[in-house]
Image (cartoon, rainbow, N blue to C red; front, top):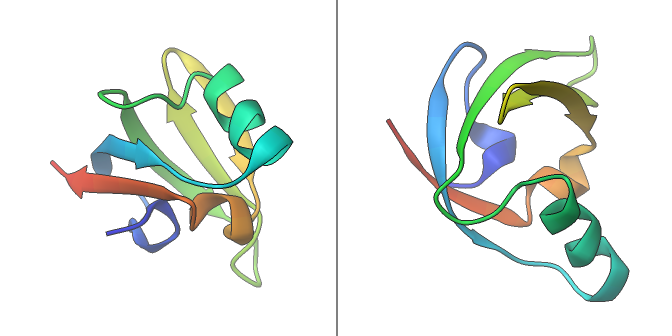
Length: 74
């Protein structure tokens, strides 16, 4: 499953982070590394961006970025 498909209120553990170059680096710098627990908090009315909670911080990602992150639902 990818992060963009994680239902609101659900938690998953990141397996891998895809993407290329600076896009992948940005996701890793945000702390979205393999083994991290991520919770989908909510989405904007048209589905993006989505608000996430990981490592004690809330942040938002666009759908294209969330599609690059593969995870396992908890």
